Length: 217
Ligand code: B16
Ligand code: MG
Image (cartoon, rainbow, N blue to C red; front, side, top):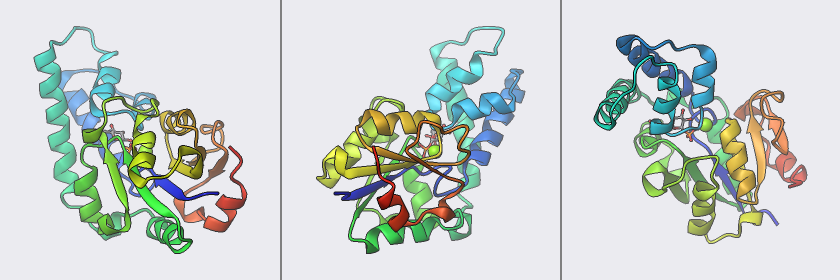
């Protein structure tokens, strides 16, 4: 039986993808590295350092560890300045309802986010108290698509992985959920998320009855 639902944050609950994108674009311009939509897409669900490595693939010179550290910190300053101003109005439509539906169905709720800013975001969005467990990149060592983050969430909930379902907007995230032995709901375009067990166009389409019936992993 399904006992818990584990949500991704960026791209599922809040539309921070555009904010991440803008911050990377600004950094890319400052250091003279080309940055296009496809590069931005590949960064989704990937942690900060991994995203920087993706950006620097297009660079014409190499960067030292210290430089990379500074660049990642710089991007994060841009990003944080924006999300400091976030509020409940920045929740994606239907996000709060999706989480509440899961709770009302008697299931547990966790968050599995690759973002080190997840705690700040949950506070700003006003939904921190809706989660039984929050696992972010500060607590894990291997990034999505590794299953570690979803397994850590299940373990903290005290629920077996095959009793959990993950909800993700990124290809790396769907892979992480499946590698953890869980069913995966994709949020976004079916063509991009073909590996998911069920794809919904957005979180507003989330219906706990329908999702439970479709659980096939
Ligand atoms: P930060 P998620 C991920 O969050 C984003 O999808 C990804 O684009 C971002 O690079 C990553 O968080 C790291 O974020 O720089 O704030 O630590 O989708 O796993 O909630
Ligand atoms: Mg995401």
